[in-house]
Amino acid sequence: MRHIITFVVLLTFCVAAQAQRVSHSFRNAPLAEVLTTLSREAKEHDIVFIHNELENCRVTARFNSLTIPEAVAAVTAEQPVRVKERLDVEYSLGDLSVGFNGTAGWNSSRSRREGFRAVDVRTFNYGPTLKIGLPWGLKLATDLTVYTNRGFSEPSANTTDVVWNARLSKRFMGSRLTLSLDGFDILGQLSNITHTLNSQGLTETWHNSLPRYVMAHLTWRFNKEPKKF
Image 1: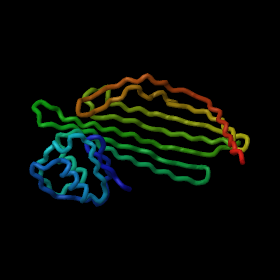
Image 2: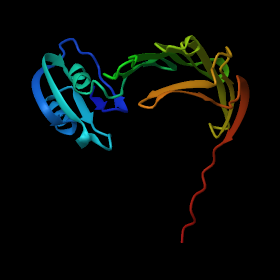
Image 3: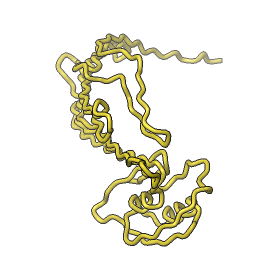
């Protein structure tokens, strides 16, 4: 598995059993140069810079035996950092397919400014997936995802929502015609409010969205051969 670390916007990593550790000392060095140095030494991570004024950020830091994510956090102590990890696992046997999807995220904001309150927001999205063939040529696909937010100072933003979706389908006429029935957010727990943490602060966004619903689809597939001259 190859990991990607993106400064400011995205930091993705995977904790290995034997994590790589580095030691460095920097004095008033450009942040781009510091991250480039760490990137060259990283064996399990890629570090990508996307800050428009990265050269204007200067770093003075000294650390010993830190993992790559810890070292990046140490040199970007006053910069907003987002950490995200994703896991996808799937096992198939005949008409049966079972999987598990999960993401874990961490948003952090620090500052030496007097009165500044450090922010650490954690998000977890995880759940199983299932695809199975049923009698009479029916196929069922379903997934259950738990969306969890923790660490917000506003209690209403620390939510746990369970979202269950399902699709039942059947093919006709040699798979050219497919009839599907979708159930979206069957438990009715999907929230239309999202919270975003960045360098400007915490933003709460309200969306106009459809609540849970059931929808039928009829799909016709056809092939048209080009004319031969």
